Image (cartoon, rainbow, N blue to C red):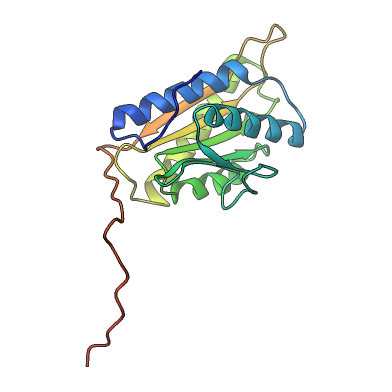
Length: 200
């Protein structure tokens, strides 16, 4: 049984370790799902198991805790904060991927996951790899230009699904981008609202 997560990661190394563990889990568990509904539900279910087994609360369509809000999937640690936000885009057009990807950039979560598909017209390993790299190269511009400021240690994951071989061997491509620096969480203990005073 995985260790329960009771606090937000306090170092960039811990965030990277959790991101790596998540990608390994997805690569081991994901299977071929072609329809939009099946593909999306599988991705959400994988994330639900991964974070549920670690004691995190989750929100997504049809979850016991409540429906999705802002993102397709969220995992948070009660009384601590958001841990992960995720988007799952079935449409393989870059514009559709980028639209969902940009939502992640404005979150206050140390893990940001974009799951997308590589179109089946890329039939060889080399062609699929090149397409995944093109997707990432374009999304890097979004990271640098559409939202210029992040928290130290944040990891942005782009997970490109390319269908498994008939024997089930995974052929997906995953990329991680980590923001420099260490996380600096601040709590609100002792803080209170002050009445607004108009300067006369």
